[in-house]
Image (cartoon, rainbow over all chains, first blue to last red; front, side):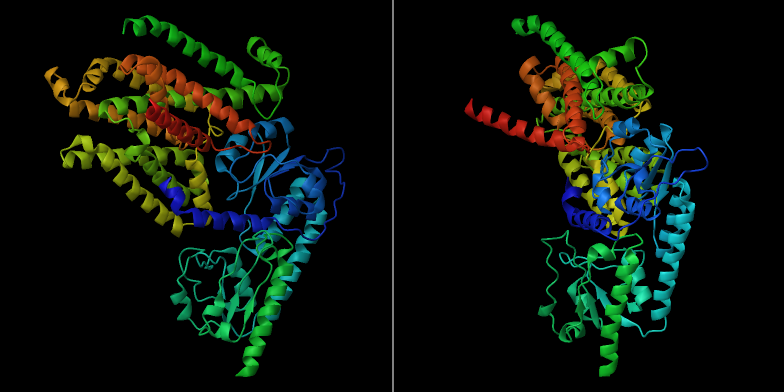
Length: 300
Length: 331
């Protein structure tokens, strides 16, 4: 119980991040009815995370999903898929009753003991664990192969990598700009190496002064921020965090980014989602950062 | 007194019947609809379908059996600790067992994330035992075994703070894993877990039965017990080690299930009295039955999800406790 009280903030942070990573509405994918081989029926799939559901729709396997977990709300059809649990616990009885041919699970986001039990009961369990943008392409191909949609999967993954390469090329030689990424306001929490948004900053050539901190989502003191030459503040806001108030930066006008009003507020839901759509958010973020960079450079 | 003696077998028989009835009833509850007739078919001949067979024998039966022995074990651990320390608030969890198990689970979650199925219960068990050993060593160093509870609280805070620090530095999902694991669940249990917990439970029962007169003597006070030839400190140590092993085994497989060890013995004392044998038998039957029904609520209350069992035991336990306090005040 003591532990419970003390890490409540971190838990709420992780849960909110997990939900916002995966729960926002996004682009519409087409589903196709394709036969897996000549006479073999397409496998029935249980997809245990919203980003897996989205990837399956992306490769045309959406119609094969027979169950998922809470917060799988994209595309619109996904809202009709029955839920058999959440990030805490799966209902094993329901999984058994559904008799899926394949279970695709989120390794760090699903209860590992339930997944081990399902494997033990003879169900085929494969894992999703995207850590980088390239992993998304790999998983799109992998899930497409498993679901009988190899061709569409290859096309979608190639297109994804091409778009990613274009964005990387566009910003590769830009001058770095010192940036503070506000993941959470109370307590003030930022990102570091190993976190999902850090790669966004790297691609957009935004320099994070806290990148080398050992915890991926470190809490920081405002004094630590004050002593760094911050030129830009990124304050992602989510529609799922209705009560969240961003940190009030206006109280700290000595920070260059504040005095120059260089605070951008991208959509957290789109930015933090580990799917094909995250590229759109990345593109928009890089473009916004670049505007600040250009205004800063032109003022020198 | 004679009335209590006369009634005791009847009361225990009724509790045993309630427990057996609860086992049968608990089998019929779950997200998959299985009728009593289908259940009877499963146990008398063969199940109607392979799906029903798997649900009944791979999911529900292990859950019910583990829930039963876990409830029994936690309740008798609480009863024994309350009697040997003569402290009505004594509970196995107050000796740092859950905090120790939490530290073990935290280390396993951070360092052995890919083999948690085996590593987590083992690490939790070792962590719980480590906590109890530290508590006992501190109490012995102070040469005051009656301060076991205070030492337990201090160790509990210390181990929790280490866990928090490790979780703060570790990857964020490890925090989730440990937190939800500590809330307790029977969803992950297997039949092998039932055998392990049962073995420890039977061993504990054998030791308690052998020492039951000594424990009863302790109820009269340390001086009276000493005059009857009972070494109070030694007996407390043996009982604490026994309860620690039992609770650590249960926590390792089921996570944190709070309040059972504290609440059930209080109910049993009202029905069967304070002496060891009736108290233990009653605690086993009521503790086992209680967890069976709590687990039924855990797996059926929400349509598409499960409620961690520790949430329900703590909620019901705290309400129960307030009612007892209110009743005591009225009397």
